Image (tube, rainbow, N blue to C red; front, side, top):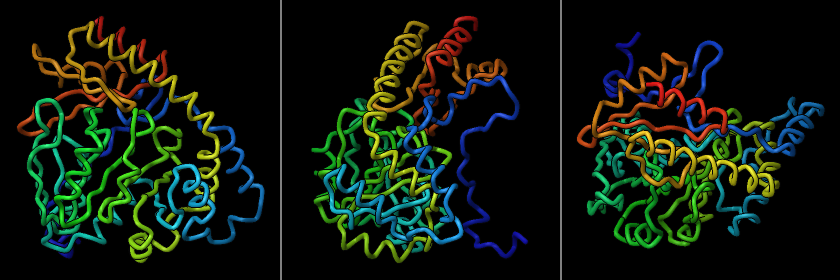
Length: 345
C-alpha cells in the first residue's frame, strides 16, 4: 500500500515521541510530564461530565466557556483564542493554514523536532540556524518564510530569549511568528503582550504545568480576525467534553498551579546542582527539565546505562551541535534515584 502514499510521506522519517516504558519500576524522566497530580477541581469537573448525560452530545466546537475563562485569566479577547487537541494539534493547524506545498518553515536549532516533521508532512522545506553561544536568536531571519517557530522556553535547553528580541524578529518577518510557550508557566516571563502584533501567535498547553498530558489540550492566542480563519482549518470537534471541562477547571485553580510550580522549581534547582556536582555541564533552565552534556565522555552511553537501571531520560543529538540528555524534573524521590544511579555509574 505504500506506493499510494505521497512521495514526501514515504521519504520522511517521522517524529519519534519519548519512549513509553513497558513494565513496572521505571523512573520516567524523558517526556517532561508533571510529577504532581492535576488540580482536584479539574478532576471533579471531568467526573461531573461522566455523571451527566453530556457525553452523548457533541462538545462546543469553539470551547466558548474555556475561551472566556482563559481570556479573563490572561487578559486577552476570548475571540482571539483557538482550542486544540494539545499544542501539537495547534501547530499542525498553523502549518496547514500558512504553509503551501513547497513553502518554507524556519526555526532556530536545537529545538523541538516536531517542527521539521510538520514541514515534511506539508511537503515544505525546513531550514534552521543555530542559536548563538549564549542562547540568543541567530541572526538569520528569513523574511519570506511562510512560518517561523520559536520555542520559548526552548526545548531541549530550557533557555529563553527576550520579548525585545522576539518583537524585533516579528517586525522583520512578512509571515507569521509562532512563539511556542509549552513550558512558560515554569518561566519568569511570557510573550502574550506580543500578540498585539498582527503576525504573532502564542501557543500554550495544559500538558506540563497543569499535569494534564493525558488529556491532550492546548490553545493559541492571536488576533481575533486570524482565529476566525484558523477555525476553518481545525477539525470540527477537536476537543472533547472531558478535556474542555478539565481544562477550564484547571485554569480556574491558579492557587494549585502556583503550589505545584513552586515544588517543581525547587526540585529543578536541586537537580541542576546535583548534576553539576557530578561533572555535567547544565544550562540554567526556565522549564520543567534541564539539558545536561559532558565534555569528557559520550552521553549516549550514560543514557543507555540509565535505561538498563530503569531510569529513562531523553537522549538527543543535533547535527552540528552535539548531543545531550534532556532530563525532566520529576518528584523528589525520582530525582534522588536518578542522582544515586549516576553516582554509582
